[in-house]
Image (cartoon, rainbow, N blue to C red; front, top):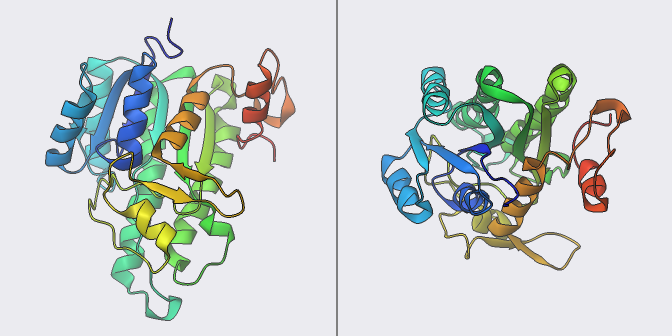
Length: 270
């Protein structure tokens, strides 16, 4: 039996890049997959790539009516959700002194507001014990030039994960976050083309490339990481034995050694 046999997984921004590769991997593990994206063209292409009955819903996370439509469609076609991958986003870079209001608003509308209300509106449709994975970035802690607005949206996501974990613990729902330098997804619900920054890692992480091409190097490890690697991490958190409850209570009870290490990556201990 496959690891996610019969589980319902929703990948926000699953029409290209990280989201598409993740949706493919989760379906290979037996999940029933729904993807959401703004572009009908890339959604249609993603359906052809994934195949096997994937549900595709055109939606813009910055428009709350679209988010309502997404979860209503998923509920009607697939039932309750076991894994929600909050992956849509946009990255635009400029010095603090030169960042226009439009660039600030666009990133917060999609990255922060979109993620916040995606999680909020998903709650009634989640199974008890479900996983919520937010695709974040280490950029919020790096203080890198030209990333002030983008980094602030990533900091917001980490805060959302902590608060959601505290509020949803009674249902066993496990919000987790994962992020790597330059690992920004390109399957945006608002912008399919992401403005590239001066940093090569960001350009490679944000450009519209296939799963095999979207590879970047993370600082210090000396290893190349890319879309398939993140898909594997999402897969781990899609399994019930990878995370425990908050505040250390039975955090790793019944987990494998890998599960115990993975549990430490979840934002349940703070």
